[in-house]
Every structure is written in C-alpha cells, then in structure tokens.
Figure 1 (cartoon, rainbow, N blue to C red):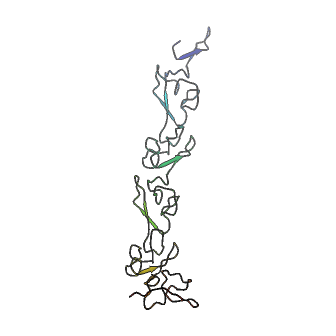
Figure 2 (cartoon, one colour):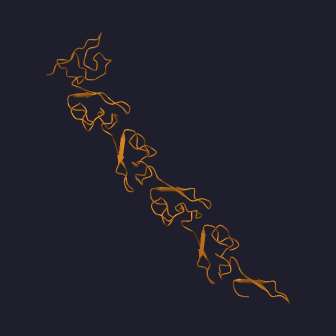
Figure 3 (cartoon, rainbow, N blue to C red):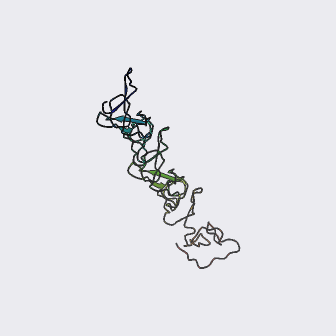
Length: 261
C-alpha cells in the first residue's frame, strides 16, 4: 500500500478499494485539499473539501496545502482585525486591493455571510471626501461638528487625505461667531464693521450671534461724548440710563462724562 492511501474491502474474490488519506498533509489529487489536519474552519475542512471563502494551494505528495482567505470575494473569514473584504479589489474605498484596511477608514461587519462595510474615520484630521469636513477633533462649535458636518455660519476647506480642514466664520453673513468682532451682514468698509468683520475706529457695534447680526453706531457709546450726545457711558445698553442713541433716559441723570471734538 502506497504512502498517503488506505485500502480496504479486498477479499478472496474482491479487490481492495484504495482511497487517499484525508488529513495526513499529502496531496495526490483525488481530494480537493489536504492541509494536514481534520479541523474545519481553517480553509480545508474535516473531509478535505475547500471551504467557502478560501483558496488552498501548494499541496504535493510531500507537502500539505496552504489555505488562505480569498481577497475581493466579499467573504471575510480571516479573523484578523486589520483584514477586510468589501467585495472588490479597488484601492481608495477603505479596503485596499490586498484586503487591508486603509489609513483613515474603519471596516466592520464582514464575515462569511456578508462583506465588510468601510467608512471614513471622523476626527482623525484626514478628509477622504465622505464627510463634509474633518478638522482633526470631535469637538462641536469650532466650525466642524463632532459628526464632521460643517456648522452653520462656518466654511471649512483645505482638508485632504493627509491634512485636516481649516474652518473659519463666514464674514458678512449676518451671523456673529466667536472669532468675529462684529458681523453686520455685509463686507463693506466704512459702516462700522469692515470686510474682515473687525470693528472700525470710532465705531461701536452691538454683540450679534448665530441668529442676529451686529448693529454698528458711529461714536455713540464709545465713552467720549460728542456735542450732539446727551450722554456716552461706553456701551450700547439701552437700559442703564444712557440709551443706544446716547440719549439720557427719562428719570436718569448722567454725570462725569467729558466732551470730545
């Protein structure tokens, strides 16, 4: 009897039936595979059949088959957290042509029944295009939100696969954000709030917010009373005796201010 075979059934009047031994690590071609064991789940099962999602090669009469996960078939049987299979051999979609998870992506849910789904990582400072922005953090209120969406009143640009987005308040949109001294809804100079949303000399601007623009007044409220002003207390609070137009409120008296030309 030859090595790698087992024979049985022979008798005085019948011949033996010889079969290749499964699991001995010797491949003679009558079995689909033989990886040297009788364990299922490693590519070659307990009856020496190639399992779904695997390819077994290299077996000879002196060497066992080596079984590997088939890349690109949409079946992930590797168990390796760095391995993925999204059903194709394309680079740049999260799972590479060699079935490795690409930088900037997370792949999950892949198994022997379904392919991996790869999504771009939010907050890692790499913008691959699946999100509106990525500024390198998961903090909301800085222009790019915790789920990588451009926040209202901001514009984000400059992000790439190797660099984070830079977000800045949109000047002139009538929404005053923390990085702006004022925002009166335009980018015109000479009206108190200039084209870079800074308060101009000799002007005072009310504090706007995300929902209300700034209002700018020349001179009044700056604390240096002009001849046309009844008072100037250094603010535009209309409820402290000196109103937003620098008129003294009924029932109040204002003292100590000095005139300026």
